[in-house]
Length: 249
Image 1 (tube, rainbow, N blue to C red):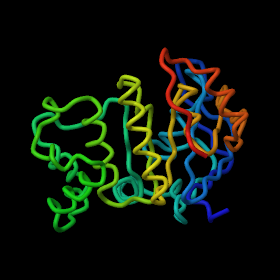
Image 2: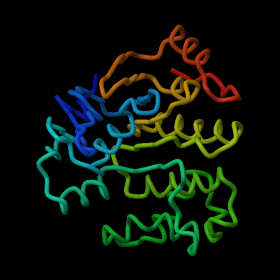
Image 3: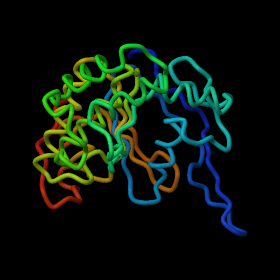
């Protein structure tokens, strides 16, 4: 196995709600190797979204250690974490999170602007070309379909060439056919060497990955490669109304 890009040990996250302490994460250990495609799944309240936020350096753990691409990020300052988010992680969200008043190419360029990079327009166009959307570069989000908006979001996530792509329910707002197309794009990115962690409650989407991490009550219940037997089991448990195509593994 390749060296881990993610190495988490004993990670906990506790929230206080009045007199009650909520154990959102309770002693999680997780390694993800460079180049892996991992899905993280579980019911609502299982801790998968909390884990994704911590992996993405959007929140801090209550306890535990987290090494991302060789950097001990759990000890970093807010400014250092912001730099890690900009340079080392690409984010894809269910709701796209695009700026409505500006064009697709300008949306994609946002991380480059924050990084004070040069040649932002050319690099943003290259990222759009990578997701097959160069011809829609000068359209605003309101002029794009849901699938096109998600492709713009993926191009934005990739524009800084981060080593890690985090996707939170990336097909959640899409119809089944468009969802298939977005998952096919993830497979292409994975084949090109991108490390992908995908959070989903849809078992058919989880089956697309090479490895599934199931969570329950803030802990990892199961962590195993996706073989044909597990893929068939996941597809049989799907929660969506439409069945997505079987993944490749």
